[in-house]
Image (tube, rainbow, N blue to C red; front, side):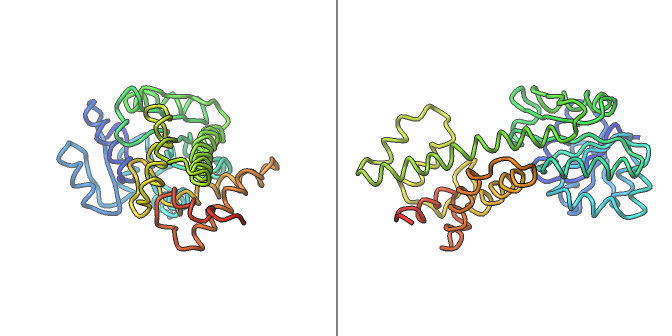
Length: 288
């Protein structure tokens, strides 16, 4: 039997599996696309063609899929649901606090222990001191995964038994990040209006600041190229929508995410959805 099974081998899932293998853990992997499993087989992973086999192969199951809807679809089949009973599951992905709570109820209903986690770093940070994961849910399940999670990141945060906590922390961090992005777009807009080169704005930003590639893109007009670590207008729109929906659902002020959402929708309506988030500025250059 393996120590842990990894379901989902995108960039993050593959980095997780490879890091665990490099640290002596016995890992079983499953992915809908077999080629991604083949790449890990050479590193020592056990590969299986059926997700039920992957779940059955280990007492612990780590799920790293595109979204929670995909997880629910895969685990809802009677064969997979039966295999997960008695096991512990951690799901590492982007979710709303409500989705995290629903996932706990879903897996507990299948007879499995569950904790919910969010990865607050890039795939390249996995296995390094700079990696960060926040996890929340049942303490005994967290303890069961703790050895593996400490292999994956230097900064492991146990958020306690409130299963909504990790997703909430990610929302808070996302709000800060989006504030930098949209605040910097407005800053660049002010520079343009006053005839000050946007490059001068870039020059006063601290090294490594998230706004640097954004303002460089605005200065160069290279909106069609997604900057390193950047995202498209459409991707930013999904993030802002998540913030807005959460604010509405819990009854807190939604004016700030509503403003950002309006900016994004203007850019999308103008056909800039696939361009770098900095392209939002093009819809704001005229008052309106």
